[in-house]
Length: 523
Ligand SMILES: [Zn+2]
Image 1 (cartoon, rainbow, N blue to C red):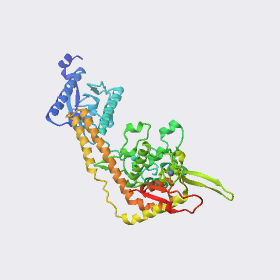
Image 2 (image 1 turned 90 degrees about the horizontal axis):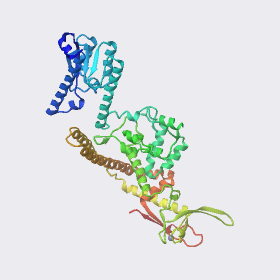
Image 3 (image 1 turned 135 degrees about the vertical axis):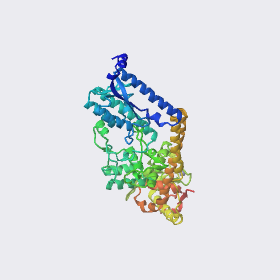
Image 4 (image 1 turned 90 degrees about the vertical axis):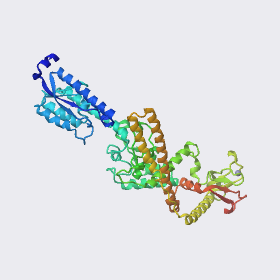
């Protein structure tokens, strides 16, 4: 039928409806200029629809207009859309529908399915879009409609998700059932695993005291703890659970989940080969970390102290100050004891000596000339160590009496600024969207704010960490000293003892003389 024919036989034209709605982005804007723009868009949508309808021998007899109603929010009822459905189904007032594009009509699967159902029941209905080429009277058309409508919805959802920045929906992330069960928790991901959670808590609390990740790893290996394999990992390697490597144990210990903090890991971080440093991904709201619904293993203070200690060690190692496989970890005073004559560090080495009546063996601290020392001091190790330990513990016991007044650490001092930063980032986004500032400028501003954010979050964690160190370190030290490994003891000694000066004792076998051992305390 030509347009001319249609005009002359208006009575025979098929009555149809027109559905109109401007895009979310435009309807969300305010201001007169935008409002006029939206009105213009509705007008031009309608014009195109009239033309297309005429081309198909149809006449628009009813206009359904849901301007300003987003189609992506399942809680918002679009009045005219709801009015349209029964009209279309009964096929009395209108016998078809013209619309601008699929995503004007529906952006949720549910809404698209409601439309498709009506066309499935009544294949005689007309259903055409002016752009996107959808014909609802065919199965292909309905499939295309569903896709166009919901893919559009997905885009909107993704944009929104980026803008709203991490907020909602995160609560479920920590309890996702697809991921392997987190170490320390039961299958429900909420309640604690009675044995694992205790081992995890003990390990976290021992780190600031100097316990090594390697030691924890060995202990956990002996207990049979394994690295949980993800489904992907299972497919890829074909192996079941594997022993935990260093980075797996580190990842478990530093996970913010341990103290109840929620994290958000961007997709980009999850894809990489390197294990992400989770403490940097705590979700903040109003300047405070957001708590998840699961039971925590340790307090935020204990977690932060552990993270800070591990971070410090990593930094030292990368600066070469603390080589991971130094023999120093085997001997309490290597690196601390120095020669009384030349102040060169003493080296611990083993000796075995056969005399006529017995065999002696052990280790001694020596100023070795082949390493650069004077060679003037060699002393059997254990008596010096016993003396230093005893003097050190006595000093701690004494200081405990004096120090008790607990300093008031306030880790919340930065919360206000952190909350402000969130708002400022949103404000920058708003301005960018309203085209008041350029994308480049917006990125500059946001990156600067993000930098400040990272800095403040770290300060907050450090304050939190110092709280636990002050509160619990001294009393637990006295209680737990005997159970410490050499590296833990050493770490603790170094905080208070700068050096142990060992004077030469003269020739021949003599009884141990404590007078010849001097301790230099840290000022
Ligand atoms: Zn020397």
